[in-house]
Length: 310
Image (cartoon, rainbow, N blue to C red; front, side, top):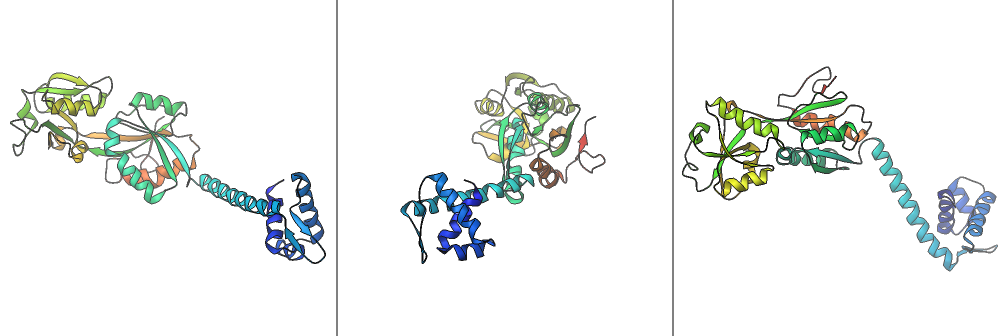
């Protein structure tokens, strides 16, 4: 039994005439009759009552007609999805993201995908830079979003975000409501820092921002994840410097003060394996990530926006 036989049977069942069905199928009647007979023999049931004057469906034939239509529709849907996949319109991309990219990049990425490539969905993992690079190299990820910029042969990259930082204090801190609060104003405050082991780019940004203002931060506490940092600040353990996008969520119990660009910048790059053959990945890079990177300080090389590590 194959899809062609199902199509033949459905046509005969709809026409209840081998002559009309043969005309509709653009074939002669004898081979059509032979195909239906072969189908009945394979199934071991009679699908049609045949006389010189009429053709009727048996009880088994009526059931088989419903099932055949369903199978043909499903086969057409599968073929359509395969064509979409071949053109990059249907796929699941495995994506790694540095934690801050979940705040800054993921919402924009999902919005752009819903508008441009709604058939492409994401399977997202919160991963540090080293984990993403290793996973990309062994084809366990399709796309990564990182802070650091590893020099790894075969990985391409594109800058998708270049943003500033914010100073975060407990909402009841005496300085929380001061207009024009500067980083230098909290020089003597204990600091909650990101763990350098888990978030080296954010740890280094905090150190660099303070040193740019002429002091070294008094790091009193260390946390691995942004939620932990913010919770510790909310509890009054200290102040911190976080990516500016964290302030957009309006978290209760916290006061955010945006810092000028001179206090440092947050850079997030998209990286992927240049040899990845996925049509969906290529379309995401060309139609979504390049658009997200417009207006930033994106890497440039011969293709106007993508840096290929040699």
